[in-house]
Length: 155
Image 1: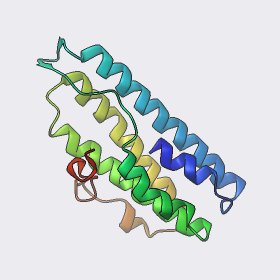
Image 2 (image 1 turned 180 degrees about the horizontal axis):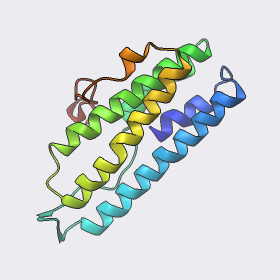
Image 3 (image 1 turned 180 degrees about the vertical axis):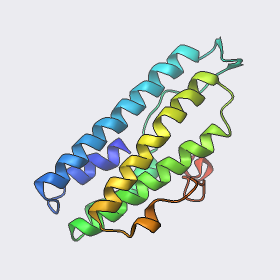
């Protein structure tokens, strides 16, 4: 998501306030990636939280970035761009929920659990800026329906 926000920052359709939100959220996503990279380096090849992790370092999934890039750079106006960013945040929140059901490593699951609500908060901010009706962006339960399917982006 940090790479997508980098593309969004380069567009000229946002107000200065909206661009400030983009920079803030990009920073959050960079922090999340760095936290996972640190964790993956910590747990790689050693028993932590009951399992051994052999996952590679956290890097952007290029096929996902490539798919979102044209939507971001081609957004004709701020509302269109914010709608793409909203869909990224909704997808990120759903993906972290999906990950929680699949992670055996306690430290990785704990990190996903800490990040999931932040992604949901990002989605709320974009929804409010887009003036989405509150009942459309505050569900009773988070689902995995909008999750990014890892199999779709495997290299």
